[in-house]
Amino acid sequence: MEEMDSYSRTVSAVAAEVTGKVAAVRLGTGSGSAVVVDGGALRDPSPDHPARTTASTVLVTNAHVVGRSRRGTASFVDGTEVAVVVAGSDPLSDLAVLRAPEPAELPAPVRLGDADGLVVGQLVVAVGNPLGLIGSVTAGVVSALGRALPTRSGRAGRVVEDVIQVDAALNPGNSGGALADHRARVVGISTAVAGVGLGLAVPVNRTTRHILTTLLEDGRVRRAYLGIVGAPAPVPSDVAERYQRSNGLRLAQVVAGSPADHAGLRAGDLVLEVGRQPVEDAQGVQRQLFGDAIGSPLPVTVLRNGAMVDVVAVPTELS
Image (cartoon, rainbow, N blue to C red; front, side, top):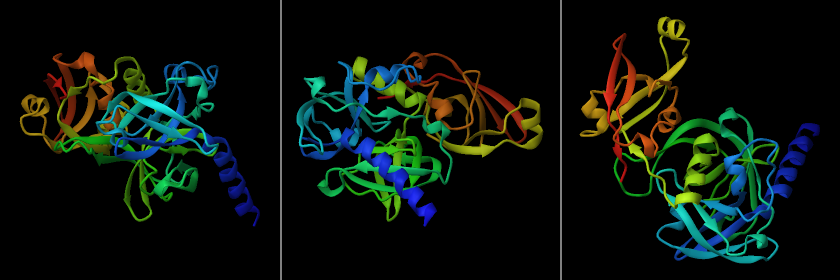
């Protein structure tokens, strides 16, 4: 019983800290959840920048919750309701940022964690508003990392990369809610229900912090498009020893007619470097594909049939 009591205390403590900071949102015909975040903490994630309510306090949700809406309302468990407007939306990451005209009316923001430190089997707690039930809490473990989720934009070949898979129960309305670790730090934004006992969340990490900051400043994210889909894969032992690299990105698909296709990349290639930076997963590629990479030569190093191959791709702007 002691182990169960410890588990219960942990989940209860996370719920107590996070629940009041997650809103039920309605925007046009869409609805879901949103998490109160300190915009300043997105730029400075250090422990010396604790989350606090400021003029930059915003709500983070999913792009698919926002849809084409520009304004709506956010309701909290204490009965507070505020008007919100859409500051920016990015369907490719399934993230969006909402602002309240009066930031001081929002609850204190959550503390943000770093999903890059998650491990399979780790306890996570999901807080959201499933089926319209405000302030619902479920708990489970991280089932898998690095999943890919097709976007809801309807464009072929577009996926949200590095999604967290959890077994915590998620239902319609959880989208945009918080996924927190055992210390009540938000490490993900719930994004989808993939099936019975299977939920997915967008990770909170360096890449998503950059996306959210850009949405706050510019209202949209300009991205370079390469045209590849892949998954982490081990590097052969001889190459791993020579290059001090344990993993690369195995290409499952190279989109026909894409910059990657024109550069000569092929399905089955094991990507080791992009832009002269080591790559071990899709996130490593995404970090190289923001606005400044558009139209610029981008060197890519792959392992193909036991040989190192260097190509140069010229990313286009993702429309």
